[in-house]
Length: 167
Image (tube, rainbow, N blue to C red):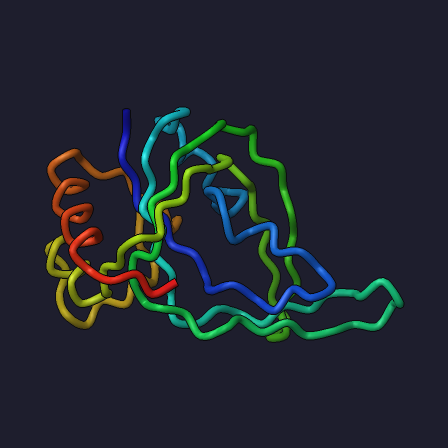
């Protein structure tokens, strides 16, 4: 079994377009290699940032709409269990700032445990990062995904379970 931390943007308002990115493990297309050690049964902490890029989406009636992210919690909000490892089905998002990104779903997840929370400040301390770290560029090859060892997982898990859930 392996242990991981993944970063996610907060959920968006998806009243007409489902949010495929909120659950599971996603990395940008060129960074699929960082999931090489991932396997079913692995445990993944989900870190939710405070903000994310606004998305341009075409509604069923053809109108282009802007979907903004809700305000995020800036901390670990869930523990996910990897259900299956995928080959990286790609989905490209177009953002309102004119940029785009091709995201690959690398794993499906189940068994979300949201009964806890680890703030960014506490997570920085547990990972040995400075207090100004914002988790931008976090992970292997700046992918937003990092494999961690069991003692690190245990420390973060204990902190997660000792705090009240925010979701």
